[in-house]
Length: 272
Image (cartoon, rainbow, N blue to C red; front, top):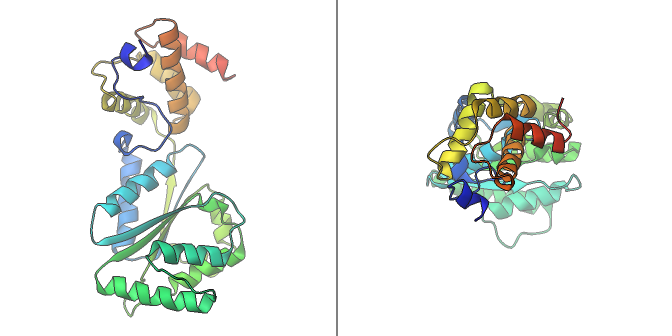
């Protein structure tokens, strides 16, 4: 018998891998998505979403992407920045390729010209172009910021032809300030705070329900301790809850109580 069978689960409920099935629409997540869609539908040009590590930025970015992909009026693309050494020309080419531009020329001016034609074509076909950049805090150079501003300058008579949604740590704003004209163009700013106590309870129960569990596993005291030591950060909630299930399975406990959470906290050096 494995953990899933023991706890009557069909899925692992507390994996930190992005999975649309587990999306929990907390009040602040719902508000953030509404604001981002407002920026997109009204072609505001630039919106940013910032928050601490583990706050749920990637989860929201994937939820937004999935929604945009499900609606024919949007032309979305996702870029995930994995290091800080990318160049402006790399960014320009990557965006052009995401928009479906093939056989890119080498000269920057030619790439921009082709991109402009592509954006006009998409606009004429009533497509709203959205570029989502995750881990945008890795974009640290003034040249990159100037490149983004240059792309935003590609406009029609009435509006922006492209909207950027940047997700990153709070330090991302300092990088944007390297190009003040770009920083001043931020139309929508969202800050992702940790979940509050009520949302943490809802989050844990939601993930268990999605995983197939029909009755509670965690006691109120266990959830209270998870909230206290995770400070409402979804990633840390998942880590503590996942390890608690493992500990409960190994010790043959059908219910996860405060004693099990205390053991997990000691294992992670988090106990007081």
